Length: 147
Image (cartoon, rainbow, N blue to C red):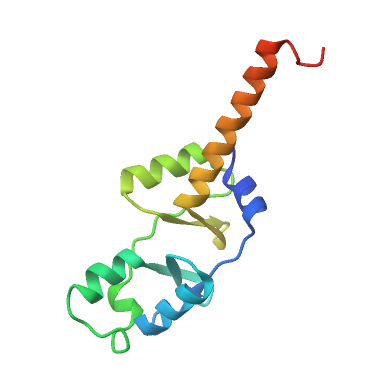
């Protein structure tokens, strides 16, 4: 059994945290800190414009000596955001994250943002799948499949 993105969202909830493109980096960081998250979506109305993550902050603000209160998120966000659909699998998520070296993937269904999958969510789902497989094999080996 392969876990789908929809199943992960059903388990974790569909909360999405976002800021507008004209928000300052400081405002984005405050949102991230308040919600204990490593990235926020950048949206304009219902449209996904980008994502701003801790990595963007470190590389495009801090290392370049910019001030968080003076820089707009739109200047330093990752604009070309990969997305995934709820029907795709955890294997798809892991492949996308690994190939593209990313830790957050917005989930989009029919043009609407319905959630975000993080690397932590993906790892948790893979571990749960592996645990279920182990339990099934242990039951099979012990002959306890409930005939």
